[in-house]
Amino acid sequence: MKITLFVLFFLCTAAAFGQTGVAVLSNQPQIVTLPEHPLHADFKDLACERPLVGGGPTTYTYAQGERPLWEFGSPYPEPTPLGDVARAYRKEKVAIKKAEKVLEKQGS
Figure 1 (cartoon, rainbow, N blue to C red):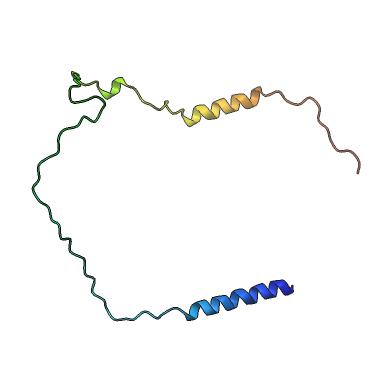
Figure 2: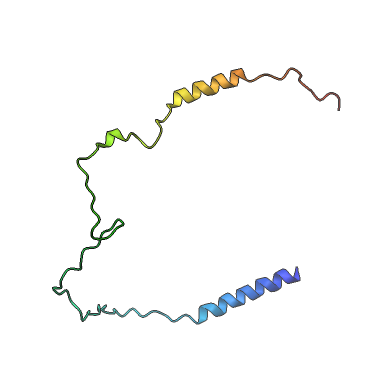
C-alpha cells in the first residue's frame, strides 16, 4: 500500500512539474514565407537510351499483336454461392455419425 501511494505521488508530482515548463503560445499571427529555390527549370539534352529489360543496345525483340484479357481467365476461383455452402454444411451435419452412448451424471 505504501509503495502504491509513493508511486502515485511520484507520478502526480512529475506531471505537475511537466506542465510548468510549457511556454504559452502567443496569439499574434505569424506570416509563413516559403523559401525560394535558386535553381529553376532549364533546357538540357536528354540522356542516352538504356534498355529496361536485360541485354544491351544490340538486343532485338519482336512481337506482333496482343492477346485479349479474356484468354487468360480469372486469377481467382469462381466464388461459391452462399446457398450451396449452406446445403453442403447441412448434408455434412446429417452424415456425421451420432454417439451411441449418452453418459449422464447420476446422483449427487
